[in-house]
Length: 150
Image 1 (cartoon, one colour):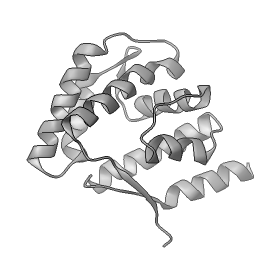
Image 2 (tube, helix red, strand yellow):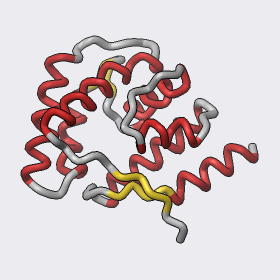
Image 3 (cartoon, one colour):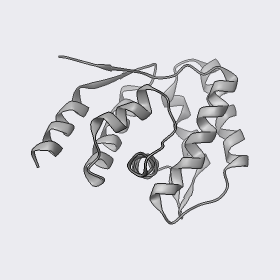
Image 4 (cartoon, helix red, strand yellow):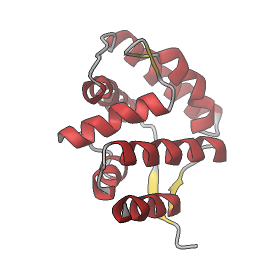
């Protein structure tokens, strides 16, 4: 219980600093917090995925990614719903150029990642892999994760 409280408190002070809307950032923190509780995840595992822009390697990390997609409402019928992902894109970046790039990434991944999974721990892995690779190709800036000490 104490560990969950500490994790929630730490997540509450994580400041995801990029040009996303405050509502989107709040939704991300809420999703991460919920997934960390659900999978009893270590903060270091979650932050490693976000901060290092790494692909999930461990079962826990994979479960967190799948859970994150689910909590962000990106999943319909055990598949990533790319239209829902794309609908959130204008909240992720604040310039038309960056929104256009993220839309391009989303469209590409929608064509490549079509399979679903009833195992939440496997659901998000192909999607996050595609999103990372395609974002790198088009030069999308990566979110910076900082701790807000206030």
